[in-house]
Length: 121
Image (tube, rainbow, N blue to C red):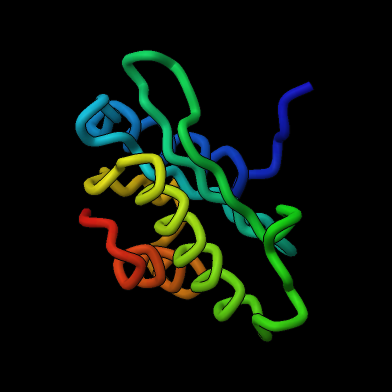
């Protein structure tokens, strides 16, 4: 059953608009961000092969939420960890997909952490 909340519908429309313009290739995969109320998730996706190359979230077993602090700090740590995993997988450049969210707060913190980790947008 589809969600009928107007905010959810508006976000879905924004996601569709963004995805028309942004695609991940083998050379520049897409760094996709999903933000829930409690957690933040990041995936690096190759859209040509339809595969997720690297993923990280605040729920991942390698992530220690106790050390990070508030949600923005946790998002920055997720960005640093996904950049570290991407470097080990041989990924240097990505296309950033904010997932229909405003580039502010946790989404911005995640992208700054990924940039600090060495990913190029």
